[in-house]
Image (tube, rainbow, N blue to C red; front, side, top):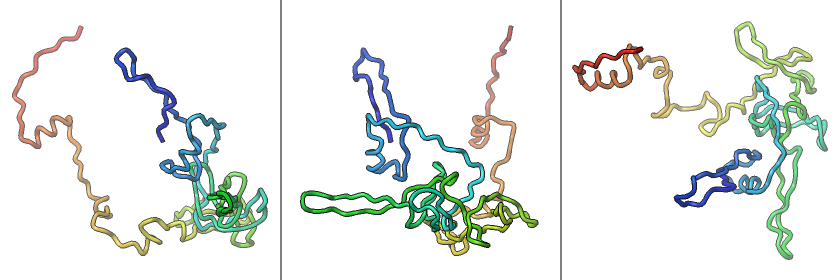
Length: 222
């Protein structure tokens, strides 16, 4: 992501300074891809986008939501991608945009379809499982102490879908098999550090069997 707008020549008479770009336009493209570099090429300046902070995130992969704005307003679909850093979700097959690539001469190229992100604060809403209608959501605790999502309109619990557990390592937590280098629960509960009134140097000297027999000089403070 490093982009240098200007820097001094490499010579002894110059103090080495450089002006780097620190503000980037973050999109659905990964920062190390060519598409991200093209969207943030040197010389392009875009208006800053302010992101509303959300303390308790309520949208997960596999949630059924309804779109509140745009050409697909009123349609319902499943969330298939989440970007919490921008308050974005993408709905499978909805709110799509199209772009043509590879057009050259008589060759018409190819048309690609991709879902555009939607803001969870104002553009999508979770569906209440009791009537499949959009509702606001808040987090509450059950009598057993479990934290659950609850529909504000009906009080119905909205369970987190199993698809939200899927990672690169496993489809569900229950089916994951521990590997040799995994950190086990026993490793988390075992105490490996014993506090002592020693500095780092004193601790290393004790472990290596080094005894300090030098007498420090007296110091005086005025």
